[in-house]
Image (cartoon, rainbow, N blue to C red; front, side, top):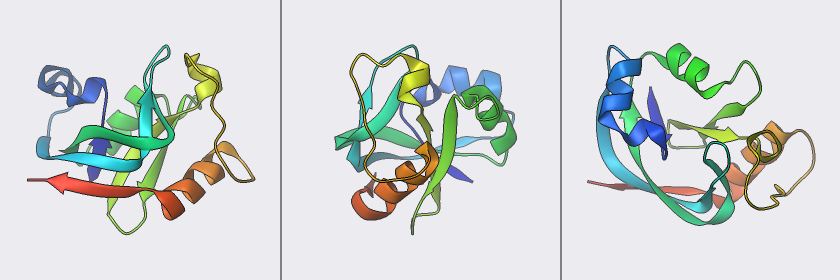
Length: 125
């Protein structure tokens, strides 16, 4: 599985401590999202964010690391790209700015809608 990473998981030492089987693919840029800081970084609607493609079959370990089961982050797939990404809930992360995802429905539904309509991945290399 390929995952767009933009925070601590861009650090090879951190990834090596977490996963047994992994490799980095190309650097990448997501257009239509930007990074904001809080207790942990997350993505929100905006201009763009740089990151890397992380390849691993150990998605369960990444889900646990990102707190998916506790509702801290959601893992969503970027339509048409075969790449997942983790988006944190701004209200749970204490982001430094107020954030509202467009659309209706649950947080995850609004994120998925924005990804489908507004976000593109540029692989660099």
